[in-house]
Amino acid sequence: MPYIVLAAWIIQSAVGVSLFIGWLRHGHHGAPTVITHVGSAIIGLALWIGFVITGALLPAWLAFAVITVGNSFGDVMLVRRHRRTAGATASYGSAIGAVLRGRMPPRVLFHACFAGVVYFLCLGVSIGATVAAAD
Image (cartoon, rainbow, N blue to C red; front, side, top):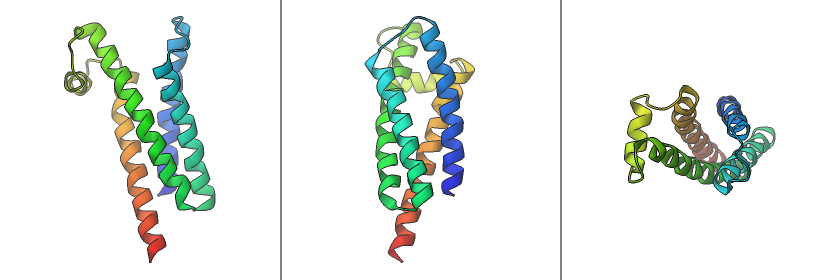
């Protein structure tokens, strides 16, 4: 199962890289929210690889903590993007509604939805590995 999380994380990262490149091509540079989101994804993936290689629980739980931070910054970016089209008072809930109704570009839609898949797979495998280690 750790390898499934790794594969999902790599797929998510590949889509994220394509979004980041597009962001850079549009002349954006140095936005702290984006940089923190990208950095969290890189650090979390590296920690998960450490878990896959060693089987140690600490890297798995640290990866989960880092992906939590990264997803939070991703949610901030999603709301900001939604507010640019729906108005300054648009909420997180309306941003999620826009995602679920397909009102975001396909890569953004995939990245936003698949983030939850990676997140909960990471959590589940971390819990499972912890329970297995306790036996």
